[in-house]
Each structure stands twice: as structure tokens, then as C-alpha cells.
Amino acid sequence: MTLRHKGNVTPAPSGLVLAGPLVKVTLGPHPDDAKATAAAGGTPKTIDHYLMVDTGAQSTIVENVIAQALGLIPIR
Image (cartoon, rainbow, N blue to C red; front, side, top):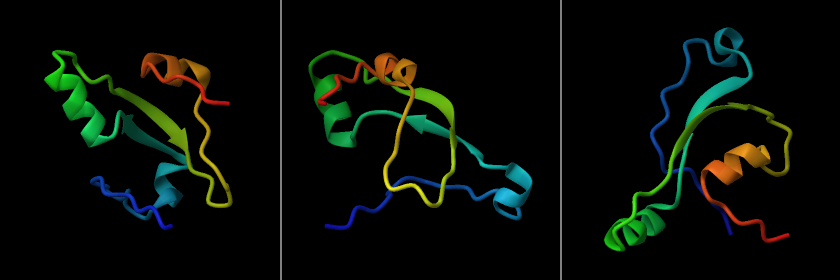
């Protein structure tokens, strides 16, 4: 299965050469989950944060404080 990013991305001029390996992102729930939360009367949580770009990474890791701010529950 191939997963593809469907968000809007504004590339930095000259890529990471000028911007460095940190990229500001907005993290939040999947759009379907956000709609379900809103339909239930809640407000979907989002957080703006800087993430480090690692082109050789095999997985994505976020700090515990980010996961807690989004109300994520660890599964393992």
C-alpha cells in the first residue's frame, strides 16, 4: 500500500538549503476524524510545530508533548 500526502505544501526557496532541516507543520486528525469530532460537538485539536526533515528515515516520530497536545493514545 502506498500512502501519499494530500495537504498543501509551499516549498521553501532553494529547498532545504535556505530553510534548513526544520519545517513548520500543522498536525491534526485525519479529515474524517475531524468531521466526526465536530459532529459530536467537539473541536478537533491541531498544533503548529517544527519537524526535522530526515530523508533517510523509515518512520516518523513525534515528541510525547506533541502527542499529548493532540490527545493521541499510544498503541504500543
